[in-house]
Length: 286
Ligand code: OGA
Ligand code: MN
Image (cartoon, rainbow, N blue to C red):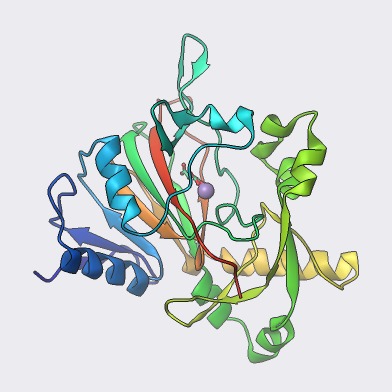
C-alpha cells in the first residue's frame, strides 16, 4: 500500500488519509507513516482515530521508547491511572479533581527542551474538543532557519543557549506546579546549540523557544535578549506556522526536533477539552 497524503498548509504538515490505527499495522506501512512525518517537517495528522489508550500507546512505541510518569508529584497526577505512558491535558475537573493538566503548553515551546535529551516526538489524541477554540499552533523550525539571512545564520552557528524550567516558571503556566519550589525548577536546565541538526533528515533547524530558552551563552544579557526576541518573532511569523483546528479523534504527531507548538487557551468559556499525550524519548541535540 502507498499512503494517501495531503498537505495541511502550504509550508508544512501533512494529513494521512484512510488509516485506522485500531487495526493491525504492518512494518512497511508504519515505515511509510514515519517517512511521511519526516517529509512533512515533523507534523502529521491522522483524523478519525477512535482508539483506546492501549492502541495509542502501542502505536506511539513504534516511534521509540516512551517517557513514563515520574518526577514532580504535582505533575505525575496528570498521568492516566494505570497507563503511566499517557499524560492527560485537560481543563476538566471531576468532583474538584483535575482530569489533566490545564494550560499545558500555552506558550511557544518544544516539549522538554530544558532536558539534556529532550523528547523526540509527542502524539496528542483529541478525545473531547470544545465547539470553538482550543487550537494548537505549530511552527516549522527548519523553515525558520532557512529564511534567515546567511550572515545571521553564520552568527548563530556554534552559539549555545540555556533552556530551563525556571525560565518557564517565571514566564508561563508552569509556575503553578513549582510554586514554593523554585530551586527544583532552577536545577532543571540544559545547554543546547541554537541551530541543531536533525539526526534523521540531516537538515538544520532553529532550536530556541520563548517558553524555556533563557539566554545565549557568552553574550551580554541585552544582546541575548534582543537576539532571542528576534528569533522568537521570526520563527512564529504567520507564513511559518500551521494552526490546527482539532476534531474529536484527531491524532497529531509532532517532532520536537524541528517544530515548536503553542496551545491556545481561549476555549474555556465555550466547552471542555480532553486530550491524551504520549511522549517519545529523544537524544542530545547537536
Ligand atoms: C503538550 C502541549 C498542546 C495542546 O501536550 O505538549 O503543548 O494544544 N499541548 O494541548
Ligand atoms: Mn507541548
